[in-house]
Image 1 (spheres, helix red, strand yellow):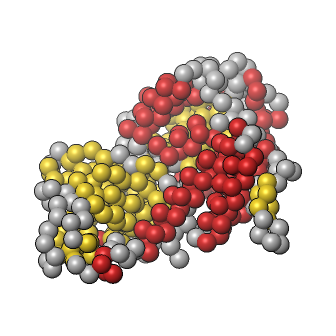
Image 2 (cartoon, one colour):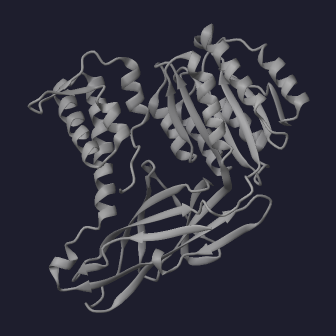
Length: 420
């Protein structure tokens, strides 16, 4: 079902007690899997700033998705401003239910403020019992979460994560907060992106829904078994984007921790970087440091466990050969570079907002070079809208770059490319 491969330098210098490894997981695209049953919630911002073309386009986009629903898809519509309510559902996508939902959508208008947690909490309450389905939230806003404390939004996002609901967060226009939407997506194994103009909402919604329909496994977990003395100090996803992961003890195995991975589509790949503290051994013998497995749900079934072959095991041995021990494995070098790229992007944009032109130019210029060298074509393209380079290689900020270019880069910070 899954291929699991470990990448690391198998040689450690004498007395070395820390190491890194990359685990690559991919769901086999040749296995014939029945698509996972889907539960889809559509959360639409109906605050006052959405009035006019944005509200009309949001209604039309939601209707396009509803028209495309199959009869086995459970759906829910939740508009929100400083409160939220269930406009329709949960209900199956039958012709009659789709007509009723479309009629209900035509009646919503825009008013009051923005409290995003209201919508997420309402959705979790309605769908948290649907664990056999892949639960997806299509979320649209045009503004910041100004009507409530950030802690309340974070708590609602955590409820979504705990209920295995992933959020596809869309910001229409440029007045929303990239950090809010990025956290909403990252914490729930979802996605976040920009819709620059209202007339693009329908196509963005349709594309997002089509990706959701590809889900083959509604929920998977990574199991990491380590021998006594070995501690995993940090885990983060490094492809297709950089996201910190949290682990929890496995109640059935005291030597194992579990990491939630979200859903998978056929052929989908994720890479994870592990930091380990390890006991030191004498040179010459090989030792096992970590053994991964994947626990996953199939449509309508119970959780399955796939143990990795030795291709996914992390073996090391200590050596007095410093040349062997000094080698940096290609995957680790690549993702270390991607982490540095992400930091420079984030700090460069913060400097830009603060008006520190010199620092912003330096950081974003460094990021452009890093993205080019690592083959991150998407980030290179986005950066090229913000920084310019003359024939001598001198970098300067593009003073003509608009808010859309800046916001598009901001929402894509953390996007990575795999090793080619």
